[in-house]
Image (tube, rainbow, N blue to C red; front, side, top):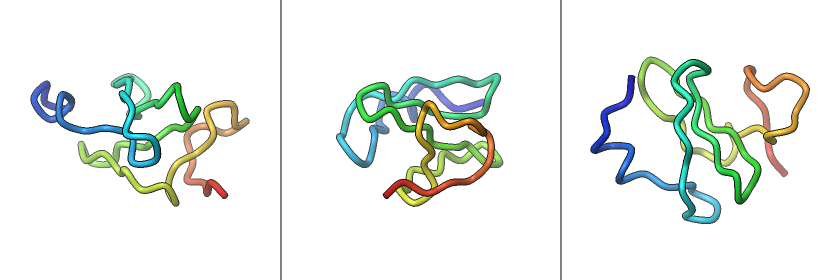
Length: 66
């Protein structure tokens, strides 16, 4: 589980927008960019190269955004 203070500090690395925390799916979602950022071992992976499109068929595995 991510700390509330950390969640208040982080933003989408692409648009600097708000990220929505989905603890049940271990991910952060940027609705503006329609990207999903994984959380691995309680660490948000906020790299564009690790993000997946929100509407991707397999939202749980690693992916790349062009």
